[in-house]
Length: 213
Image 1: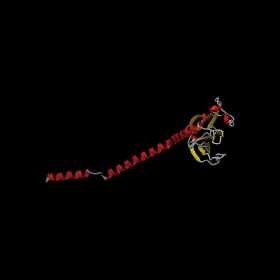
Image 2 (image 1 turned 30 degrees about the horizontal axis):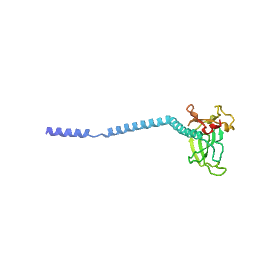
Image 3 (image 1 turned 30 degrees about the vertical axis):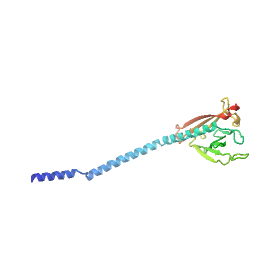
């Protein structure tokens, strides 16, 4: 009788210890909730404090790829299908020239310009044939090459022009004297957070004009 009673008591104790009590379950849920809240707040704080750096890094990379396209285009500028001179417009914040931008064997008219003071776009006007050859008012393709460009807001030219001797050209009417174009893109997603801007620099030697030096 004693042995049977002892065995029954052990079974009862085993059953009591074999599962999680309600109190233990509540404590586990509370701990899990607290840990989840801490992780969520930490992630939110990380992205909140690093949002500028992440956005700035993305826009700088975007501008770098746009700069590569711009430099390549300028190096390959050439005479138009109707014989017009390669470089047609030289401004501090814009440039226009002829180049086969579409790769179809016909020379297009390409212009780079700021839209809304901070977005650098590329307009492509394809050769239409005839004497005029190009519809300068209606581009066939419009591409965004860089955003958050702060050059105009800071009065820092995007394009600087040099003659064959490497001297900067102050008269923007001297189109036929240009042999090299220096490009500067100042990128900052939040100008009010200076310092923090990033400047990309590039130089294009106008290959097809070298014979005129």
